[in-house]
Length: 109
Image (cartoon, rainbow, N blue to C red; front, side, top):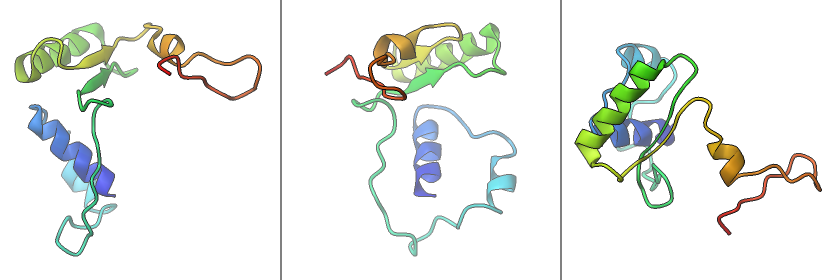
């Protein structure tokens, strides 16, 4: 569950707090983050460590804009990525390979 703690810390570093129910719910699922848990390096963000926001199905455009504005304020314009609902980001960057079923190819190579 180190990944959850890493994501939580990363979010706080860029100015986001967890949902109000996060601690009350996760205390039943996560071990306490203490010295007994071995530390491992968990990279958050994209390959360069920049945050990426993907608009979720329950976030309207106003909420998405609020999140993008907060990212611009906290990490600076151009220092994060975002994908809005309806964008073809994944198909543009990870197109489906018709030759082999269930295989994605990475255009960045």
